[in-house]
Image (tube, rainbow, N blue to C red; front, top):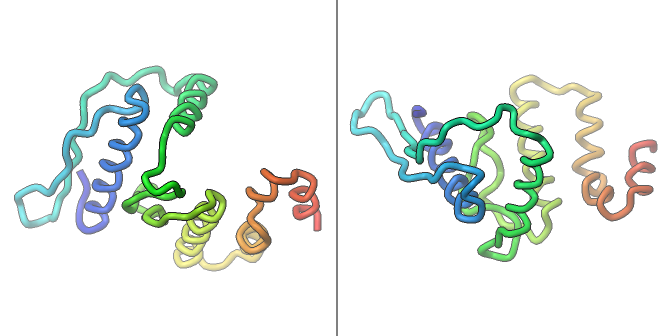
Length: 160
C-alpha cells in the first residue's frame, strides 16, 4: 500500500516493472496480478496485488543472482529498440527518469543520474567535492561510456 500521488506513481511503476520482468524471467519475481486505488476517499491509498511466494535464500547467492539478472537482460527485447521504459518507476519514494527512450544506455543512465543528483542537491544543498565528481560523471563524456569503450581513457579522465 502507498498513499497519495507519489503512492500511485510508486505502485503503477512497480506493477509495470514486475510485469516486464516476469514476462522474461518468471523465476525472478512473483507474477503481478493487479494494482489500483482503494474505494475510500481519504487518505488516497493504492495497492499492488501479486502472486505469493515464500522468501528464498536471503541474501541471495550473489553469483547465481547476478547470472539470472544478466540472463534476463540478454533475453529481454525493447518494444522500441531503444533503452528506457514506458512509465515512471521509483527508487523508494523518488521518481526515476525511466519514462523516456534513448538510443544509448549510457545517455539514459546519464539522464537518470543527473535527475537523482538534482533531487539530492535540492534536499541537501551543494557539496563541492561531490559536485565535482558528478560533473566528471555527467558532463565529461559519461564515465561509463568511456570505461566501456576505452579503459585507458577512463583512467586518464579520473586522474586529470
